[in-house]
Length: 226
Image (cartoon, rainbow, N blue to C red; front, top):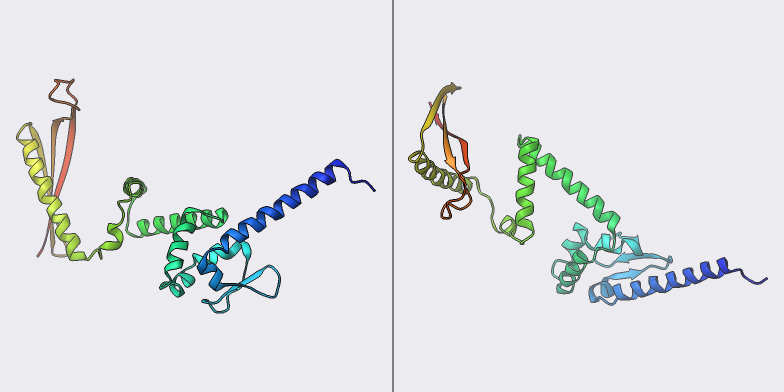
């Protein structure tokens, strides 16, 4: 029986697929860390890891195993693995797993923010701020700092002093109104001061551009224990 054109095409596609699969497999196993630690089992198509006990996975899940926390911990002293991990982060071989991981991280971030009492608007603003820092790779401070509460308090107070100086300068150039509110809750005194004033936010004052006067609202609070 002479094979028809469709059979020939299917056979050709299958042949090409096998060649691509072998080529991809050969490229992955050229890495020294994988060559030394990922062993093919007697059962065809299954692999195990010498560093991780009771590990068993198919070829397409090798990457998932390599980037798992268990394998990272067991291979932490392997320089070849550090190089491989960098490559795997750039060349994502398992898009479905990465998509699932992104969703899990997204929900974990939302969960953390809501547990801190942040509103939807605040979460959105925080996420967009982190995105701006992420693109020029400016998030290294998250790993380099321990975020001790006392240090955070010092930073907040420093920002407060800086903002207060700017506010004083703005008020010296504009008429303003004040609203003061005092309250005591469980022997804790809270004083809030709200100031409202006009500020010219034109883009370039030197070129005498059109004034862009906007109403500004600033709130400062002070808490003291009774």
